[in-house]
Length: 160
Image (cartoon, rainbow, N blue to C red; front, top):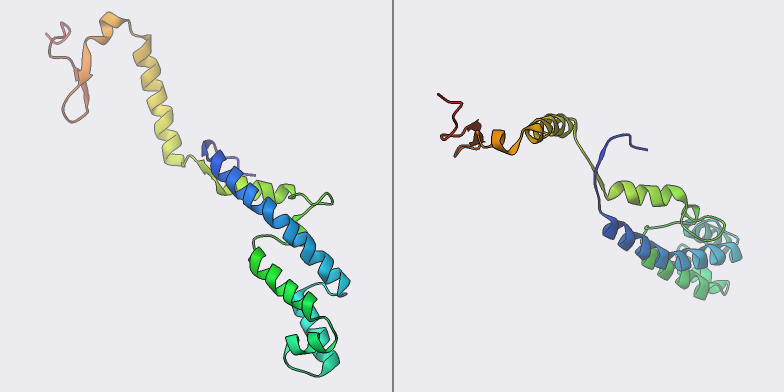
């Protein structure tokens, strides 16, 4: 967890990415169930097992030889659709996103103040607070020149 001061949270981006990942959850669940049915933990493990069993080098041919070609093709299709965005470890028991996934999305779309920005903000906050303690009549004595520097107003009676 970041202890820096938050500058901006892009909630729309967080919601969009979360919504996108929630669409992928069904695919990940289906992939996990297929792998469990094939008694493997990953596609690579299934390919290794089926190639080792058949003696072939091509996993699709090996899967076809054992009547597992539909499942294997579906696994490859699911892997393509999921595109590494989510895995079974990212889901909780209720098939929702784990807190760490939600937190990483939130962190990705949160902007924090830098140390320099915090120092500048503190200084400007003090200046604004001091300026606001002046009465309206006293505020008339100061203004900004063309370069943006704070100066006495040319009409100020305090100049003389």
